[in-house]
Length: 337
Image (cartoon, rainbow, N blue to C red; front, side):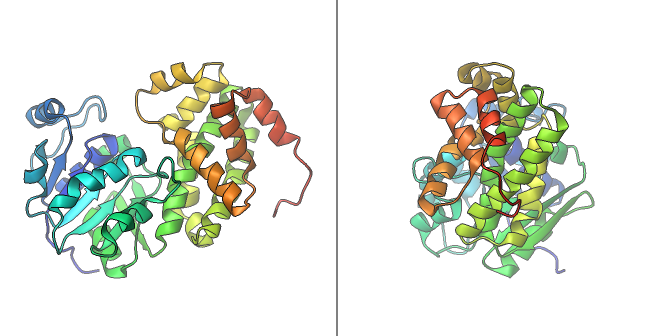
């Protein structure tokens, strides 16, 4: 594969994942700038080369430029990489739109549906920019701290243009980080959004003490829901069985680094939603995703029973124990249905 084009990447969003990706790119020798909204936070990150809240114990590369001045971060950048919560995605596009210039490429590593509309993130980009800029999405089974520590990781880069996907993958890869390419942006985005709902379900089951059998069943039947919705929206089954689908689902359902899983654990152990959210102290994407995926399922006439029960727990105060019981007592059917 040819060497990646040398261009400056502006990473928009200085949470754990945005910072980890910016540090990865900078460590790979790519000119990289990281932007966050809080001037105080960014000044502290720049002065200490660290972000203890998000990536404890990690020293950021000295070549990484850290700033809260959006204009300077975007000036002359070739790639813009958005790593913000899905609920802030449209607002972030509006923020950067005045400084977007011909020749720029727009990438994102955000996951989720847009709250209130259920739109996938590439659809929001199209709302704002049409096809004016090349676009790509980065997704897959990744915990930010493990990436920052240099632990082995594999992800997927999906783009309509195979040359763009290949270039972004090449820019990200090194001896501990591998990037595969895809043309299926829909499948990659659906996998990254729905897995958060299912992680809440897995956390609830584990919080109730239901054990490994129940967890394995939830993951397997949850994958069925991911594939149903993904295919209905135009995604490919192979993508949903890959890193951005099954891989991300297994990761977030089985490890307590997952915010969504920890939130579900708190609910399963008897905590209320307010206390559970407060204990996480970061965005729990699966809460909004449950509402939007359920709405899409109803619109498309798709059966998503696990998503339905998570929605009922979150929005109609259904007991987590009753929700699991209702899943187990559904009408008998073939596994392939």
